[in-house]
Image (tube, rainbow, N blue to C red; front, top):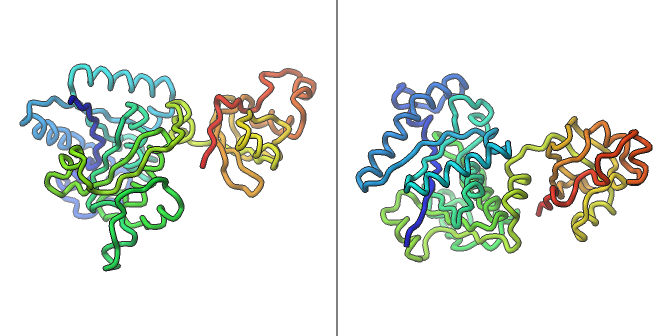
Length: 329
């Protein structure tokens, strides 16, 4: 059976560190950028050599968060990847750490892999870790820790099991991988975390052996576009909702009307992503707004029929249409 794969690879900065004679991961941003620039070439050369032994072709794709936040560039990247699949080329994807400051500071390839899962509409996300999978407790500290073979849903309890540990070289830990599995599950893609250092682990996984930790896909997966809204875009502000509006969104699948908005936080424009906060301040949804923040401040708490009278014009009845709204668990 033919299987198409995409490799989301970290390691550009780490590869560059060795060639620059750095023993510790640098904290200075320009040094990180320099290490990434040196390491990216070495990294793709290593992949070319490894896959070349099996007569497989590879291609390097360097992405930034902006590439995926812009819907047109997101779709362009998807088209490019589909062309590579057509020519039986294996894409090697990494964040472009040489030019993207914020992603070097806060990003990691676990999160990127979840976004790529949506980008290519993958059937499985396979994460190669340095441990067997998710344990009930930190196995380095507790002898009674045991491997969790399957997770039906990523809850706060599951996230707590992962802790917040990470190595001194990379930027991701088990907590990051569990959150990545939750993001992939929302799109309808299961995630399997296995020990990448274990010989034959990948083959064992594809042969159906019980290995690692399997995170099941969500029962009601989001569409690709709604997954993009919820997990790829960074929110520009918040809308504080009353109990009635929150219930209309959560239980009735309604659009957000101005009457249910109590307050506006942040400054944003038409089409920007915002968070919708419930009565207790919890984030319950995300969506793309039909009005500027200053316009919403004028019409919040008012009925739809009053919008034109207040503003002198009306774009839409809804502040956020349900087609552009994603409910968060």
